[in-house]
Length: 518
Image 1 (spheres, rainbow, N blue to C red):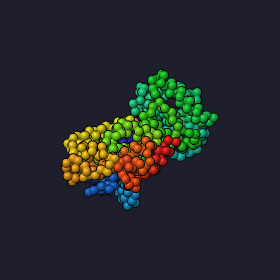
Image 2 (image 1 turned 135 degrees about the horizontal axis):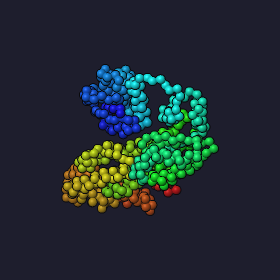
Image 3 (image 1 turned 120 degrees about the vertical axis):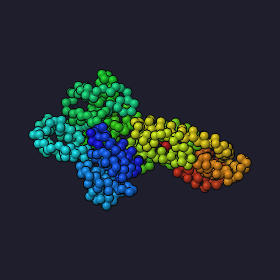
Image 4 (image 1 turned 90 degrees about the vertical axis):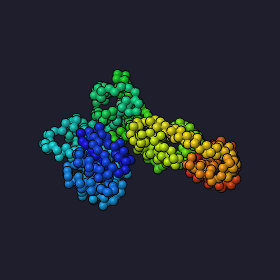
């Protein structure tokens, strides 16, 4: 077991690093985490990690100083420097003081950090074990492992593959990454011993002859086939046979992500990584017992458009649409877009930050909404879209409940909201509402802002625009008529207000509806 220490003054970075490292697969454990260089130095007096990831820019004791301290006290510890800045001075300073590598935070991926850890572990092993003479001949299993996981140039591959009866690897290939559904999401079926499962697969497809199978990690395995005189549909038929056999004999459900044809043993590792990502994304979307082709995952410029935040805001205050309807529609769209898990996490964080700002503005008790668990930590427990959707719906329901309590304490605001809802077709003003409720305009303004988080005029406009959008969807009135119906006599002002609210002009909104109906 290899021990890792994480050091960063940003708790979100620590959460992200912990979630990306494949602890069990790599045989690693989190020994300690620190939020400052000084705290890390104190911890190092009591424990010795094998690998340290540290931020460079931290107050008081910087990451460069920490790296220098580690280098002077125990030069065998492997240190990786982290930074948000592409500044060569940081690079030079960290490497000069003993860091083994340097990573930019915004470029770190799950793949890159785990590959780096593998490299560091190999270095640790090489340094701790005396060099042994290389075996005279490489075994078939060792060669296949090297091709799949650690490919490097192989001297005279044709002769080596011929000797091991693997010459078919020089021809066109297809591969599939398989998963045991019970390891992902809810998953039906039992957790059959994986050795038994691989034996059953071998028995099912041994007629195919030119293929090999290799476990990747718990719940995942790789199949590589010769595609010579075989099509993708032939391979899919093999996958279906495997699914049927394992389901019938073992009660086990399997899923597969199948590549297109490719050439070159040096390409197997990349193809394996791509198909593993695709398989896990489909599991993350809640799918099971499937066969999917290799396909690109969307890399959007904008994940959630402004109108969705406006709609979410309306839902919290006006309870329209319902929480369930809002998130059902949102996640149906996400599934159709094939967003990667990383992009869905960005979306989740954007929604949480929006809700946290709303809680702060409304002066609500955040602990009554999120409980003792921070939402950033909750992300680590999500296995499917349904888990995320249920969590966000629960948070929004808790906010609505706290808002209801707040409104009951400030009945004046409730009365003002009711008055606006009943009179939005007129030119409603702050003074008119204050006169109707027998209070001064200044008092109403302060009380309304305190209990709702927005001022009266903004709320009036929000209600008018909500009804305007509903009238547009009915397709019965012109935009000019809709402006009059919502109590706005000046169409230019209506146009500006609609665009400010929804981020799109009313005419463009109508065109988008027409295009969606084609």
